[in-house]
Length: 217
Ligand SMILES: C[S@@+](CC[C@H](N)C(=O)[O-])C[C@H]1O[C@@H](n2cnc3c(N)ncnc32)[C@H](O)[C@@H]1O
Image (cartoon, rainbow, N blue to C red; front, side, top):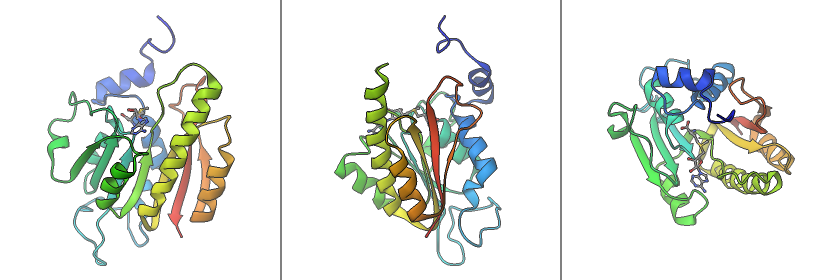
């Protein structure tokens, strides 16, 4: 069994806790560290009912890009309160959702997030308070090809910052090694804080990391 096919600590934990992918622990760690669901100014951190409008008429809308098989989406829906839009080329796994993906606070769009029509459809469900993207191209094993494709995808994800509310936040997965510095620079221009973070649950040999833009100007 290769290192990639051998179930590891995080994969086993995900199975036990009812998530289709280990990646959920990366989002959980970023949420715990950066308070992703408290990004609205004036939000006290209570997750009581964010699918209802707050005093200023805002609904806490979350966009999950590259969502399949669906761990990040399940994390958001289990947290409760938000309206979630998720998009991916592939359908979500229905193995663990216990009907959550049928809820009226959830919408799934199957398609290419870099396609203009899909982008318009996704943005029509906004504006969003939080955009989370774990989108990654299918890897070829050729690091320069993979890094270049990932960069193109990360740039497309960055363009969804147009659909964020003021004070909103964004998480983008990037593969280190390419010219990702420009993405971090743009995040620092658009958000009060722009930073890079590699969660514990990333495989040690993986060259993925996450860029965060917190509190959109
Ligand atoms: C690492 S997986 C995401 C895992 C997910 N966060 C979870 O927790 O279940 C990366 C996903 O990005 C999707 N993806 C890659 N390119 C895409 C594109 N252009 N449009 C939509 N989804 C894309 C892939 O289909 C794949 O499902």
